Length: 93
Length: 487
Image (cartoon, rainbow over all chains, first blue to last red; front, side):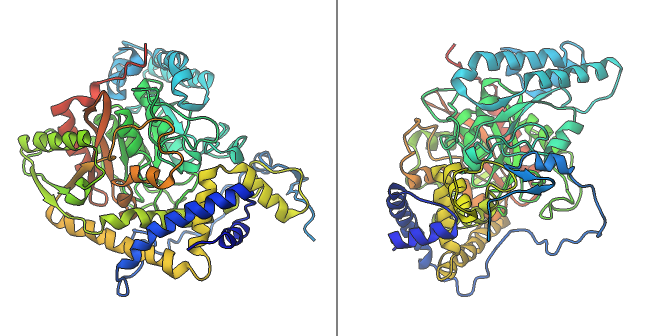
């Protein structure tokens, strides 16, 4: 069963800040969804390989050749903050 | 009937015979948008000026005697999670409310090469997470057949736009039913191609092992024509499958004698609306009458598809949506102490409730101590689900089911209960888990609301799906009906 402490921990991992109401709501709703998901435990899958994706493709290679770049100005046009050709963020250290 | 109510292949004929101009077609669509958009709210962005410019360019080329591709001059609406260079692409999320992509998705490049006229960007559930378009971060879309009902989702804007004549056709994306379920609710044709058939480059990622772009059209012929434009290998998407794609119009044939059609009995179980069941039974009768062999089959692990999906899709989403951190693009919270605080406040204010719920669920399923019990277990059950289909396809050419257990539901009816909402995709999401192609075709009406039937095919058997869908359409003609639009 998922607890309120679990929800707070997972929120930190996911970089989400939840208010009291959301913590309560998600504890309840995630609990219900996970309880529903527990029916998967009925199946014996000890001999079943996982399917991460359905294609037989693996290790798709290409030539290591320089392609076209996106223009710096167009890329930085969407940045919330910038300085010169850099993305600017609040102080980290 | 106005020009905007016609399918693309009919308009293309009129255009080539110089009975109408591309500009007239475009103006007809824009006029319909003026008339009904206040009610449908299908679009997040409409760019009428640019569309008219594109249409006039097509007219000019035609006048100069150019030999243009089949869909030249046809207006298309694009789901707002597909990147369009210079045209705002929001994923219906506040976190991307002002995002203007510096590049085009591959499918948009292909549309441009096909001389398409891009009308605008359609509303959706935020980041394609939802089944009703009520989870849009901006406003809900309404069903053109009944404005008190949802258009389905997550490609609800695309489906509503096509049904209402606010576009001639549209592109959507389908991760668990997001093209097929809204197509069914709005009475249009919607196809999810085989995983890897259409490039995902430039599609904003939700669940990368499940997402596919596909067409929403007024009929099956248009579906084949649009698939001709968008399908193909793309070196920029490493999960795009190499090799040529066929000309899909060659499959549009009415003779389906001897075609083996299986009905998964698990899809007829409880929760299925009695009207929807009748639609399916009538569809079976039509197909039998046409000479197909219709018989019951079984997909024994069907009951496990929903929980499997709701572990895998959120897990992939939680990882994909980690990129929205307020650094390189999108919304950033201002009043912050430090970088961690910026991440948390940006994401908490930028994402809506359902997106946060799925990020939480996915993060939990992937976290230390729970990975084996939830995520790995779901990947193993995914194998069992895929094997069910492999087994069924040893005896059948296609499978047939309802697209959704009910017709379009009322706005607000399921929004407070996520599990109830998720059940609306119960017949569609196993197909994404197995990576198969499937198409929803209008199959009839219940109390004036359209109901879809779904044909499911083997990997890369889009041709077989178009064949059976076309044969069904020719014998039923449900795709020729249009909503009254409250006029």
